[in-house]
Image (tube, rainbow, N blue to C red; front, side, top):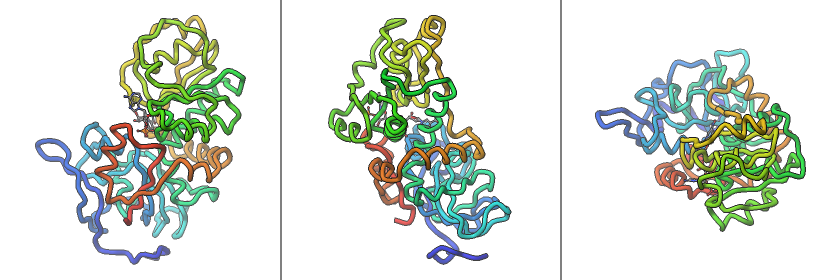
Length: 338
Ligand SMILES: NC(=O)c1ccc[n+]([C@@H]2O[C@H](COP(=O)([O-])OP(=O)(O)OC[C@H]3O[C@@H](n4cnc5c(N)ncnc54)[C@H](OP(=O)(O)O)[C@@H]3O)[C@@H](O)[C@H]2O)c1
């Protein structure tokens, strides 16, 4: 087996491992042998992973993410192919995986080595480094899936703004940057006044306080927005739908503020407003390849750098608490060897 990376293949290494006991899943750094990795066709030398809200739910055991024990966590990974049983990949290829069951039913990216199904892997577009790929990660793929869904619904830039909620978070930051670069006027909604300059630099024309939207909404309000991307859910999503202009649409991709949806049918039957569901983890890798092509075209690598920062994987437990408390700005890239 050839090893194009700078690290020799070790017998054992540490990974973030979750194991089930009587009280649920317990998660810790634990030694894993190369021979313990699942029987999948491509061995990847993982260089970076990332921290998503979903990762934090898995790491802290607060969400039902993990479906089998033991499980190596991390829903994203980027690295280089070490060996491949698939003709699609050769040693040395730069590859990325976002979602595809990682951390649920497939071992994930919080490990310096991983075996992955070839059909889950996407060749890394040359526009991005391995670290930048994880600066994008599931959050960026989700933001781009949302943009593409809105385009399929017929939306294009107009003077009426597009609204992005959870704008200071991973999906939100990516959505603000993407929509702004595509020519949409963006209203960014955040609970953190301190992020005003950050969001303006990403391209937001307006920054709104999230408390104004997280309230009981009339069945129909004034037509404030052409559409939007929502990672918050709950009353906020209901408010967005009630204030979306006729023939607009909202892409719903998250639940940072709640899983309920207290709406009436009026936005749908009186304004033809669309509610578009987005699920990145269930989007097949072939469709995700199109998403990465769009990201390479529409999202400058320098913007990814301005949204993300690199942290060592060794800090995963404190970072997981930080993101669940809504305290992370943009994206966290995890250096799995630090
Ligand atoms: N459907 C999919 O495929 C998919 C993919 C990725 C993520 N998601 C979901 O999308 C959401 C965001 O994920 P992420 O990785 O971007 O997380 P994140 O980085 O933590 O961003 C979430 C943002 O939501 C806002 N927020 C947090 N708590 C809130 C509350 N109680 N009420 C209103 N706003 C709140 C905060 O932004 P401000 O401080 O700026 O207000 C926070 O930064 C999560 O629910 C996640 O599960 C779904």
